[in-house]
Image (cartoon, rainbow, N blue to C red; front, side, top):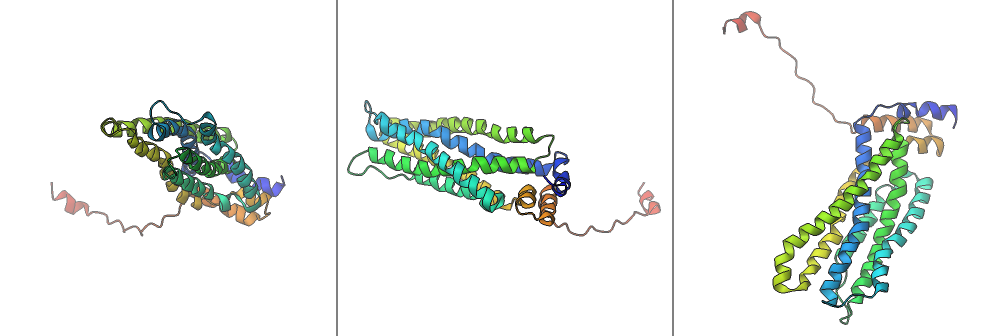
Length: 275
């Protein structure tokens, strides 16, 4: 690292913990929250699909069930490689947020996966596997870009703590998946008891699609994060822009305040007349 780079990064390395760091951790952590939710919830979705389409006493083959559960993991590998390369070539900001767009598309497509074709319920699992693979690309793309972006914006004395806080959001995602499953089953329990297992379809489709909600909310904030000064300075060699980006990040969103009204001092003799 050149002397110019070290001077350039001093404001980031020595920055005190502030709202800017909280924003960065929340924006990055929201992706990890959704990632873990989607990775976990499929283990709850598949049994509901089996109850709805295969009936009692019948289960999908272990092979088909395995393909559905493993599809997102294969997508993760592709997403890791794809977005890691794009992040190094194009920059963190230019690709950040698009992985969540892919994730949102995959989650929504899982929620509307096709009904059985020719009365073959395996077709539902096949379509789920396809859309879970797409979902996995978005999940895989989120890991490297969010981790790198968090570390490059973090101060040097707290970098490990910031990254740990972002990764800790995975635990909240898993807990949310379990709570969502309980909630939807409670809401539809009477319909399932009175009208049969077909109402499990509402349950698993809600679970599969819910991950798109927090991801969609996070896309806007990810698009607003500036490029990391470390990429701009060390990769592009643009130190002036890097300094501007560091200042922009630490300052946060600019809010224009109305001009303050002039303060008029009260007349002491007048106020004293009121007792």
